[in-house]
Amino acid sequence: MKIRFMSRCLLMASLAIPGAATAAETAACSKVIVSADPDYPPLHWYDGKELRGPSVELATRILSDLQIPYEVRYVGPWKRVLATAQAGKIDLVATLKIQPERERYLEFVRTPAFPNPVAVFVDRKRAFIFSQWSDLTQHKGGISLGNTFGADFSQYAANHLRLEESGTADTNFQKLGLGRIDYFVVGLFTGETYLARHGLGDRFMAMRPFLTEDKNYFAFAKSSPCVKYHDAFEARLKELVANKTNIAMLAASLQGMDIKLDVTSLSRK
Image 1: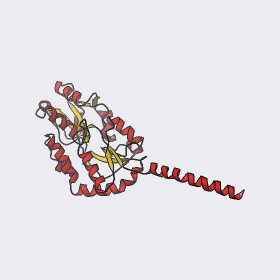
Image 2: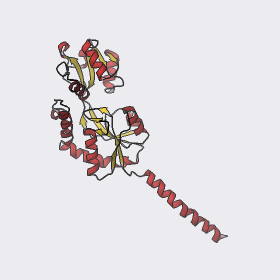
Image 3: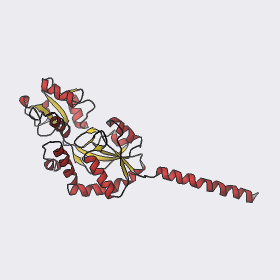
Image 4: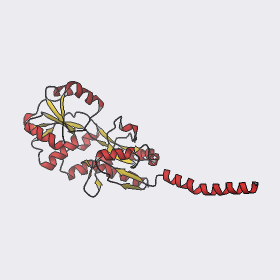
């Protein structure tokens, strides 16, 4: 009886080993799946075939330097990218702003990858003096659906500004041109890209100072086994930021889109 019992135990143990190996393989990070917002040029965008832009370029440079296998994967619109990251089906988001709700499921790499200031765009013929948020109180503004620019500005806007949320950059620049709004709040790069693509740089402009001095960051999905690479990824990112590799990538992207901005000055802020 004892011999038979021991034989059964040995058999069960031998059967359990492959199962344990499979579980370990499932928990391992065989490659880092990288994705990004497909409609956020010049930082990242989808060209119909692949995700492109300095966010993707910098992510893959770091992973290559660390000899970590990766795949850049287009998964659909931005909301789907975030939902997929929350589900742990992509491992690394390149790049985005830090927001409290995102920190629930994303482990942000705290070294900023790129400057990403938010600007107040106006019609050059109807420009007004702007040096602080309170200068906007006597004007009517616009913002694209779903856009937020930090808790402080959101609270200030709710309490003091007439800020109308509607449509996209295209919708809001049309409203700005028709005089239905006096200014449009949007990311500097997003606004400048739109103006360059449509040849409207002579009609509209981004005012200085910027509304907020925002930045974009990489983030690993907390539920992904690849989050184990977080510290090594950040260490290499710090080196590339120190030698301005990130700024060179961004400058090349802006130049390719005929956007004339001094990103060197932005990177010092």
